Image (tube, rainbow, N blue to C red; front, side):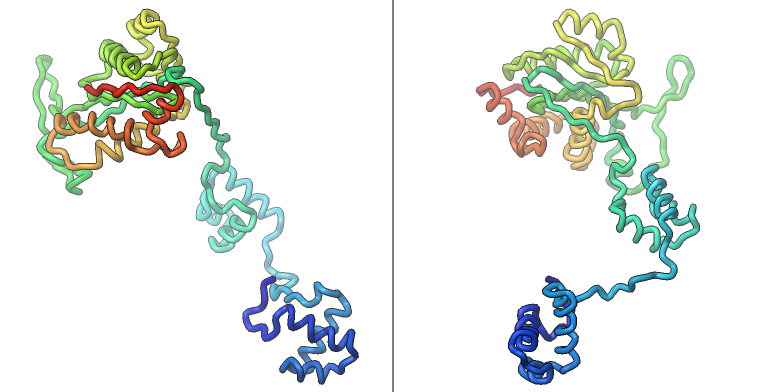
Length: 328
């Protein structure tokens, strides 16, 4: 029971005091003196007990029974409908010309205080039963490092632009991009990645072959690969390669990157813990650091989705596999 902050009598003391009056025939004044309280207070508890029995000894709410300017139910329904359309509190307050404090209080009261995934379709999570049953493949483009650390580290944007004129007379920036090709097993989260100069179909096929060799070295037979709808994966070369390697090629629905969510989440982790975790002097230095991070990810880093175990441990538990692994 929640007692009033200034209550002098506990629930047990109230029971004892009321019992003296109701059951033992004491006068209110004598019972009040025995419990060192006023006759008015004692009379109040006796009266409440006689009208409501045991529940009458509990403290009543101090909130008013009626509020003159309470927001009507129709407006509350409108606020809830706008929230399901992912409007923020300030946006709802501005649209309905209501105080932000009022809108925020209503959202909290109806359980819609946190926006989260409100109004979005439910997340559909899945995990394959066998290693190699499905491999997620994706590419992440990273700007090359030219002339030392950039704005993300220094906080200062460099205004000079290194460029060359190509054979056709077009000016091209010389920094360009690195392309990080990644593959991750749906069941065990065992990952493989390489930094490559482009994302052409021939490059993607060559990466696919090396990724298959990596998984084969770990005792995994790859059955399917899942990619997005990028041009390398829609090419005839890639289709022929999958057929020659005995792979079933699946592609995500257009504009639905969450379908390939395990690769997307792996890339996010990779950027935080490798690409942006240290100050690199050049792109080759950054690329050399990738293999060490991949080894840590596979062998030592605990993964929350697989019971806070490293991917290699889950692989060994599923298949009794003790292959040491290779990294190039």
